[in-house]
Structure formats: C-alpha cells, structure tokens
Length: 70
Image (cartoon, rainbow, N blue to C red; front, side):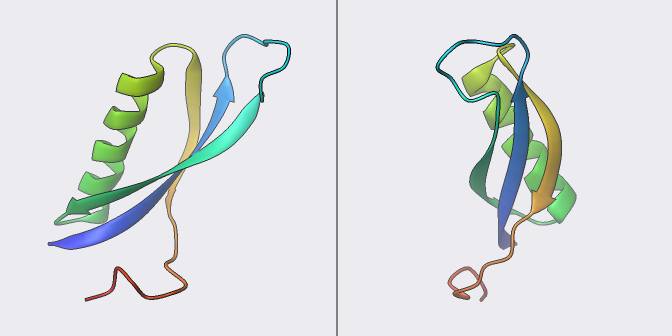
C-alpha cells in the first residue's frame, strides 16, 4: 500500500457572489492503487461539498519534498 496525493479540480455549479467559482482541493489517500486512491478522494470530496461543487478533473499531485515516498 502507498500514500498518494490526489488533486481535485472543481467548479461551482451555481455562481455565488463573494465565493470562488473554481479551485482545487488536495487529499492524502492511503491505497493499493492510484485508481482506488482517486476514488476515495472523490467520495470524500462529494460527501463534504455535496451538490454545490462539481469535480472537473482528478490527478495525482507530485510530492516535491519526498515525504510520502517510502
């Protein structure tokens, strides 16, 4: 098992004044494969933000410091 950094890009479904319309959120996920880590991060994102934000893209984020590399 490995630790993955998953970067989720999102957009707001309905525009709101004073709030960002797009952005990114990063999750650290412990899983056997990148696919499973991406799925877990997406589920957490949807549980937290519900129908207010839509996921536009998910990708593995590099770990520049090498902290999560075993």
